[in-house]
Length: 340
Ligand code: P6P
Picture 1 (cartoon, rainbow, N blue to C red):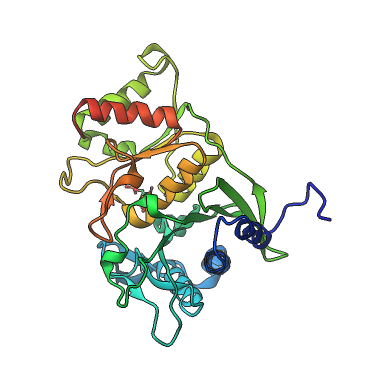
Picture 2: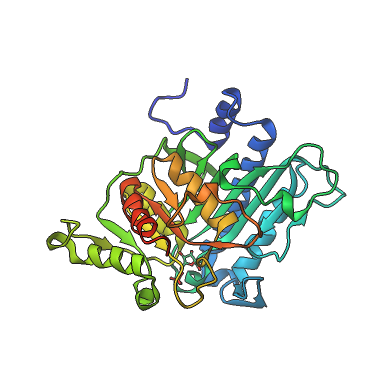
């Protein structure tokens, strides 16, 4: 009998979730394979300069961003780990221009895996936490040829989502729609062990995360909202606020999951036609699922992120997520103004 205070491994957690009918055997396999790939990425990231994988790859992605060597390596690790298992129909990655179909050499399954293989990679060369973000959708039944449109489902259709943060410890945070749970990598065992079951984000907060250097570009609702935070106790909010910005979404979201807060990446005047910097399908949607399952909220300033019907694989979205009551304040300001 497992002693009550001994953490269970991810494998047991997933078997129990399957036994409870929360996931299928194929989804269990998918999550275990992604977790195994994240262990390999963690090893490469932790090698740092010793692994010869720092610096730029000399290539760019469809976002027009220079790829780091670890971006490319992490992407390859995730694709190679998942393509043979028979659980997937295809992938979509921040580092791939279009979706990637499972090669015909392998059996195909019904799941679609979308991921940012190494988010925050500009922080790698300065040894700041980075992470992998993933989202799982299901294919419509009976399709004979996978197309991009099969990926274009709202975040509410996700059957699983998670991230792995490569920080002081490597942690996998996962939801399959029944709460949000955190696993810590035990490097000696090589297993992710359940260290936080059913995480809950405090509904209120005194901490916000935003890149303040963009303030002059923000639209009026953002200006008003942040100005009131900065007025602190003597202002309309009646309390002082603290600010954090890691510039690594996984690190900022993990802090918010752990102690509360609001994470904001709004649209701004620099490119008014661009709804924001972050990508809907493999950053905002999985993080929104994780946050909502922990009692938090996630909007684009006007509506629930997971209600957005996507029309492009790499489309961007404004993100307001975290402590429920704080996200509601920021969202109210935008709705009252009729939009950003
Ligand atoms: P900025 C990393 O590049 C990222 O996509 C997120 O992880 C992070 O929250 C954001 O961009 C940081 O953006 O403009 O502050 O560098």
